[in-house]
Image (cartoon, rainbow, N blue to C red; front, side, top):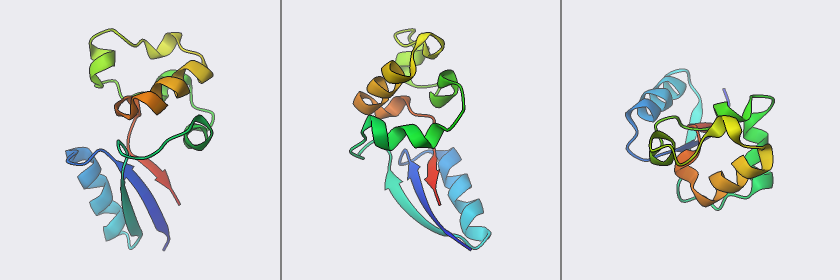
Length: 97
């Protein structure tokens, strides 16, 4: 089994279920607060791989539901800049094995 660095929003019920499944499968889970991390664009970018920019975002983030941020209209650079400033926008969890 492997060690998983698990970046979550504390108190998220979905993240709690995901952590439980990872632990049940025998993985060592090291939990990090996604909102408290010191993100940089370079550190954040590898988590998203080849996925379209719009899929990087949490669709229930307040700025998205209020229409202040439209992920489909953002470039890679603009998306990363927003997420570094407002980590609540990041689709979670982020995991690193």
